[in-house]
Image (cartoon, rainbow, N blue to C red; front, side, top):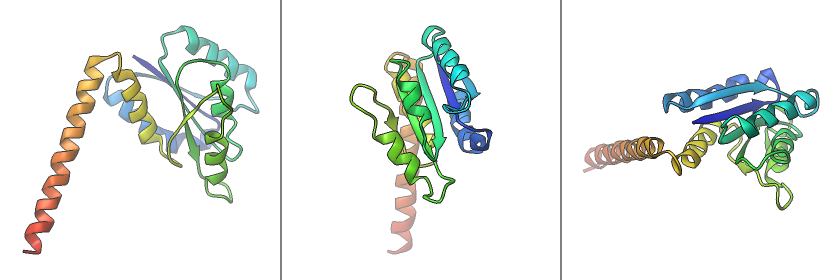
Length: 162
């Protein structure tokens, strides 16, 4: 089980690290790169080609501003690509969100919330879970724990106002 994470700049690292932790916590091999679609396009294309042949199953991309990275990656692979729009510009990530979500037909990029690398990791895990039973079981157990915690919080609030 392998997921690649590509960010456009080292300044994006802190926003991507939560996804790395979640994936590794599930036992997924994570291959992280910093490859700008504009400044390192040849290295990016070389890495995408590696992903196409090395067992990578999902690629998470994180980019801000013009956010070309997810689309450039998606144009060079048929692996699922998840885009994480990042804040940082005057438009607080809306520019990146619009860039990533408005892909042309035939070159889709699944898009999560601005700075939503955690949900990108969980979406990647759900994709992996379609072929890896151990991932699916761990996800189901985590969801059950979330439900238990939510119901406990509800009981506490209910008891407080009785």
